[in-house]
Length: 168
Image (cartoon, rainbow, N blue to C red; front, top):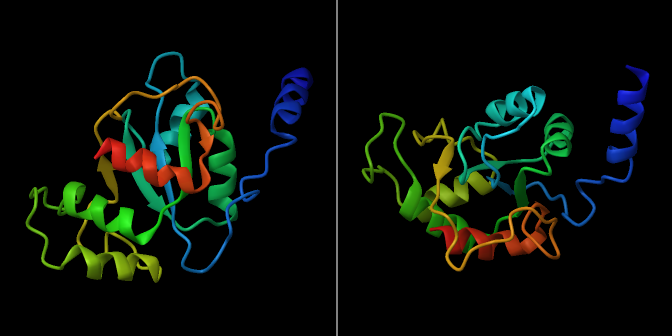
């Protein structure tokens, strides 16, 4: 048991989730699940479900805090994440936002107004929108088994915007 915890500590020792993400009050993080369900450990599967990333190519938006940093640290080899800008957020809301009732495109508010409210810190559920987005596989493919500079897993910083646009 002690050997397992030593292994995990060695793996997570150098991880710094906020290393290149500037943490502002209005900074929003987009997390996209890249890997599928096969050979995923139970604890990581539970963490992905708590983050509402139940399927491959699903996306969530969060404001990063201490609890979510730990969850992100645990699933960094299965997801891509980074800071999303307003332009990409509006495009994501226009094309992929769904009402809580499940209606496809019958949103009561304009996507620009929704994006402003989300950036101010309001929750998607309060605005009547499902808290996750289902995306298509990215056009022109991805390297789904490699970490960020060579692939897409882990902290993509501002390049998450390019990835999300390719997935819309």
